[in-house]
Length: 424
Ligand SMILES: C=CC1=C(C)c2cc3[nH]c(cc4nc(cc5[nH]c(cc1n2)c(C)c5CCC(=O)O)C(CCC(=O)O)=C4C)c(C)c3C=C
Ligand SMILES: [Fe+2]
Image 1 (cartoon, rainbow, N blue to C red):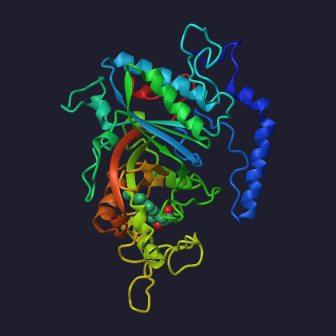
Image 2: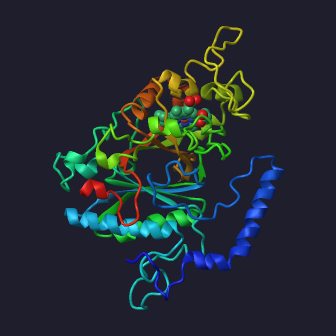
Image 3: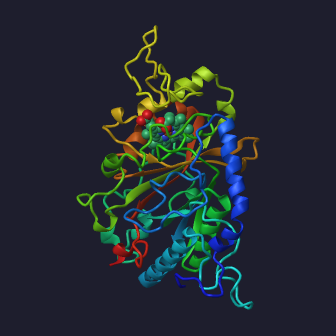
């Protein structure tokens, strides 16, 4: 694997340049459509690359892209050196793919005719479309089920990387939970995100096997104030009161692992909790508008807190209706999840809508693939979810069916590889 393409090779970006006029027309059409709909227009150009290297991994505060392909891997290699080699190869491939290039020396179409191509090819001609690839290590990467040190890194397992406890109502499928390594690929083009996971899986053959993967087709949060707030499958704006990349001080307090937290290899990193949350949307769709708004605690049209007019108005948790009940109900989702009732804890939510066909009983297998980054899950996701699982009136309409927790190290510098500090 080389970082430079061969003189024979054609980069995807090169091909994209040739097709630039057609794509530009598409972008212009999209903006015009948005303006007609009265919506805030998205970033003007979602086709370009996102820098892979930096102090933090891309794909966390990066303005949330529209598409997700998430996968977890079980490491089948048993030797430490094989794992390191895999991480090096994955890092090199991720750097190329996020730059919009084929992987390998010869890419998809320029290699010898006798060998399988190094790159699977379905992204040839596509722009990078803001592809980010983010990696995290699960508890099982450090120790096996018997507590044995798998790769000589047991002592480096962060205290914050706890196994998540059982929450009331959990109905977890082991085949959609856990995993030694998680990879989150996000892009504004679904084929680019799928290509990324597929090629990492291909590189991993014989050393790491896909445990499960999840496609997401629409973001359910905004991670920048420049983005409009999208809607989840309940039809509500989701991501209004999220941590945003502009909140730099808060990100240090709530998102990024600090030197005093340790371990060293996690400084500048963050912990990811993933939850596959099935939504019983057929039942939700028969629930009155008033009840839906009471459950969430916000208006369905505006996204404003109940009793307020605008989406970003401050929530008044003391405001009451004439019957003495709280305008933002005592067991509403936003009240129970708000930092005011969680010792100040916040999350950077980065989830996606999913519909994976139907379940054989005429119900859509649909929901929210919840992804949340944080500085310490023991102080953030766990207590918030304990409170939600006990009292949230939304629980009647959702079921947590998959789960994972991963330590995502700090950013990659040129010449280093994902998790290098964990192995040195
Ligand atoms: C444990 C954390 C959370 C889970 C699990 C969760 C699931 C979940 N949420 C929605 C829809 C909405 N959530 C909203 C706000 C919100 N949710 C959480 C946490 C979890 N949600 C937080 C911390 C917040 C912010 C609360 C606040 O500070 O005001 C909203 C309102 C809009 C917004 O602020 O984003 C909606 C809508 C669904 C459908 C869901 C599971 C399927
Ligand atoms: Fe929520």
